[in-house]
Length: 257
Image (cartoon, rainbow, N blue to C red):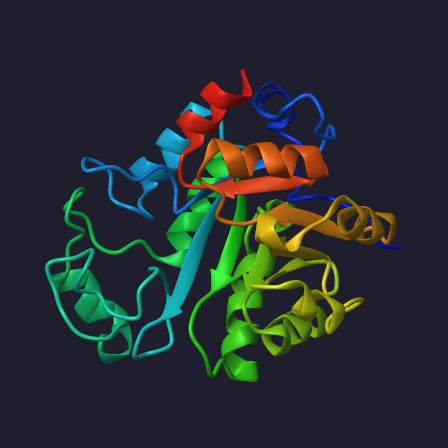
């Protein structure tokens, strides 16, 4: 029987209750989009993730991409040029080459691997929303990502997200207990995928209270995606969504008070 977990908030419930507006449910999640990046802390780095937790985030949203040799690394862009001292598509680098030659601009550390991220989640207790970035994920590549989560000690702290329903359907077949969340740009994509995922990441502009309630009655998690202003946060609070994804954790906390 499906149990609604909303990113498995077992260790961080106290922080959640402090962070969420009064109208939110006890399972409300405040998810940090790529951590809490700044000029000093690069996005998708352990220092940025740690800062997000310290600021009150209850989960971390981050991105997984494949190297040339199909290893999983934490990277948003399709290329390495914006965030490291290297250049070119991530798919043109093997993990060994990436680790030896490329350094993230702020930490001067190699690009974080998915395995390192899962180890950090175990130590910190953080919940993770892992987006499988890019297209053309083969069954074997999806299986490798799922197996990495299965083999970790943080399975119940992880959910997988994607813009592509087909990717998440494969995840569900490989690991029925692993939560999935579809990232959508509009309500039509929700209607077309009902019953196939455990949750949705939806912009506030596509939601109404009735829509949120209909999904929640079905046990489906509804998260307001990429919300970065007080107006958006207020709208999502009024809609009583299950969580918010934002890059501005500290500002959100100030607003919520």
